Each structure stands twice: as structure tokens, then as C-alpha cells.
Length: 128
Image 1 (tube, rainbow, N blue to C red):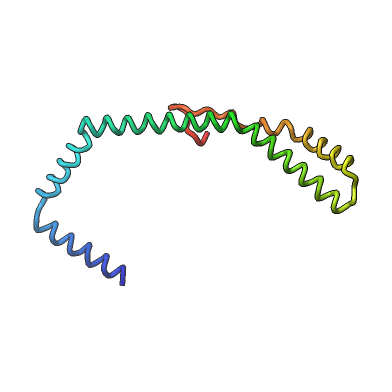
Image 2 (image 1 turned 90 degrees about the vertical axis):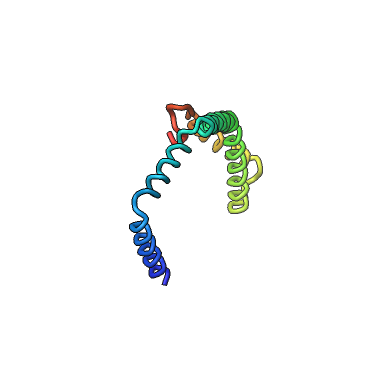
């Protein structure tokens, strides 16, 4: 049913457009060019682009600054949870658990700083 309505609308539009001629199309095209070339519209588009770029750079900087801290906290939480789970499973003492958690934290310390080197700029998109 939806397909029929779409095809019927397309056919009606084609017939009406054919009868009106090329004039309305050209008028619409001129209006679109006039709007696109409007200095105020171009100024606002440039302003929006600059604002988006600045926000992206600020956000990337904040992520880069806070990333290692968040990663460190996550590693500590994971190490603690892993130690707690192992203790429950194997009945180890808390000293052994603390020692094992420290070992896990030391082994994964380098991975917290592996990321976060991305730079954002006009020539560097966010995805790189």
C-alpha cells in the first residue's frame, strides 16, 4: 500500500511538473543559490565550524588529560575484584591477595598510557 501511494505521488508530481514547464524548477534553483551564497549564512556556517572544532579539541584534550587517571582507577578496581574473586575461590589470605593485585597492577601499568596520543586539528579528524 505504501509503495502504491509513493508511486502515485511520483506520477502525479511528474505530470504536474511536466505541465508547468521548466520555469518553477529554475526559480527554485535560483532561490537555492541565492540562499547558499548569502553572506550571513556563510558567516554562521563558518562560526559553527569553528565552534565545533574548538569543542572537539577541548574534549580531546580533556580525554587525553583524564585518560591515564581513569585507566589507573579501572586497573585498581579490576585488580581488587580479581583478587577478591580468587580469594573466594581458593581461600587465600589477604596478604597474598594484595601481593597478587600489586603484581597485576605492575604488569598492566604500561597499558594505561598506551592510548591518548591522538591530536585533533583541522587536518586531523577525530577518527585518526
